[in-house]
View 1 (cartoon, rainbow, N blue to C red):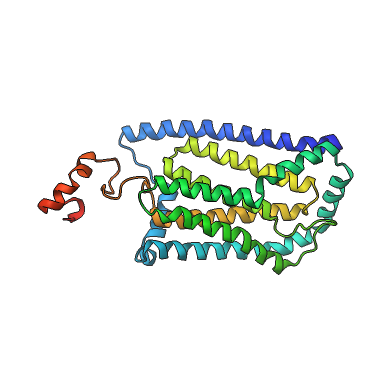
View 2: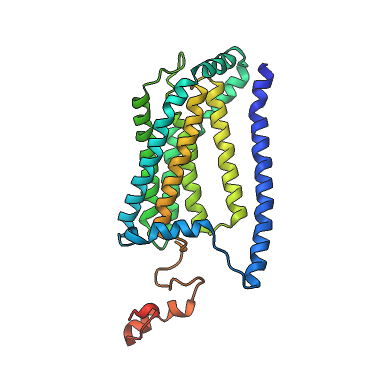
Length: 306
């Protein structure tokens, strides 16, 4: 049994990697199909475009970009927190299963494997997560030409939410931790891995205009990290397994919330494009080069700007 439990980590990583390969191949086929449709004059209306239109239209569309970000972030975070709070009693009701898993882990730990898990579980340590956010925000500030404040704002909100909203759930549930452990509902480490690393990935996808295959690679890496954290926290008996699952779920809620808030600001625009360029897709060097001349002559630019 000890060996079987130890093998669950590499087995899970293998299954995630295989799923990622399958998704990568499927994304490649979809890109080929869409390219053929585009050359043939076919159109595509994805669900994401509809969501972006809702977030940027109506009453929200009349708000300034920072205020729109704040409103969407606050609303979606509140919904995610409320759902996770409602799931708390479900986790408490699963205590017999938690006890069974906990006892199985404690009784079948292997010394060297436990030491290895003590190391890999630090993927969610606070200093690493915060350092990743700060480094990413600084890099993106150099690349983004529009809404330069957005990466730092979104990552700052995510760091706040992944800490204080988790504390709120912990105090609300007041669930006893496993013996000799400080683990609480939900697992903060699992929340941080999914939510914080996930939002960093989202911003790099946006900056690089990453295609479907590139996004599949990024999400697969995130899933691998999430499994490493979930397995290690369970194997070390630091958390009840239901707390680990709740942490993964709440992390997904936080990631969706900040992704929607980000989309409410930038839509489908390229954040790395010079604000002086028109909103139409594709660069127009001639327009950018003639901007000073238009300012002198008073010639009208795109959109009626003089």
